[in-house]
Structures are given as C-alpha cells and as structure tokens.
Image (cartoon, rainbow, N blue to C red; front, side, top):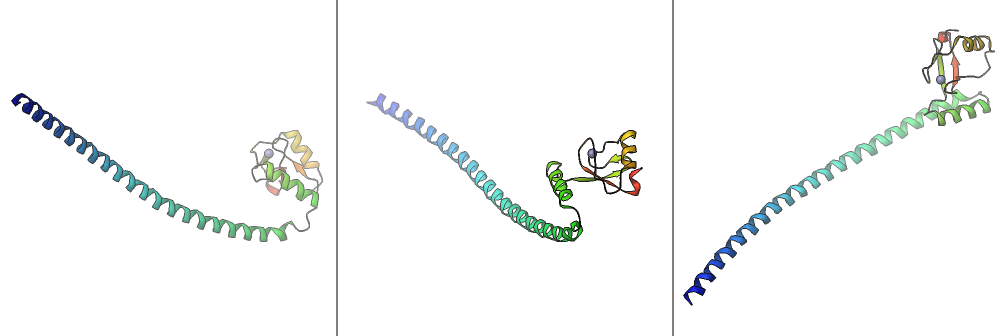
Length: 148
Ligand SMILES: [Zn+2]
C-alpha cells in the first residue's frame, strides 16, 4: 500500500511536469498565433492602401489616356487610312511604337544604324513615300536631323 502511494505520487509529479510543458508549448503557440494575426492585419491594411493607390493611379491613367486620344484625333486627320492602319498594326506588334524618327542615320525605334546604301535609297525617295526600317519594320519619320 505504501509502495503504491509512492508510485502514484511520482506519477502525479510526472503528470504535473508534463502539464507545465504543455502549457509552455501552448503559450509559445499562442504568441506565434498572435504574431501571425498581427502580420495578417498589417498586410491587410497595406493591401487596402495599395488597392486605393492602384485605383487612384488607374483613374489618373484613364483620364490621361482620354486626354491623349482627344489630342490625337486632330493630329491624324488627313492621314491616309492605309497608312494609319499600317501604323496601328506596327504599333500593336512593336511594343506601342509603330513609327520612329530616323535620326543621324539611326532608327530611333530599334537603334540600328541604317547602312549607307539604304540611306542613299531613302535620300532619293519621294517625301511622301512611306519608308520603313529594314530591321524593325517601323515607319521611319524623316526630319532635318535624319542625316540624309
Ligand atoms: Zn528600326
């Protein structure tokens, strides 16, 4: 009987130790959970700010685009339809740039220097002939700085 009491007492002490360990583990887990909940709350707040910024910037870009399109309309008046269609096609396929200035014998679209023979062909071409870059196919816009 005495032996059984000692054994049960040891078992009680052992279970109390285990309970303390479990409580310590639970406290660590609760601290981790609290930290993660705080991080989620901070991320949610940041997300709200970023979405508001995105929406605001999106509205600004839309307004800017509408203004640019309104300004573009009078500029393209008088251009032949086929030239505008070519420009739009090139613009779509050339990352938004369908025409580029020919500047100092270099295509400003792809930055390739046009060879001397091609420059000679361009020099002799009528002013209203559409010239295109052999490298990137963009429409080349001739100016006094073209180097012709
Ligand atoms: Zn080019």
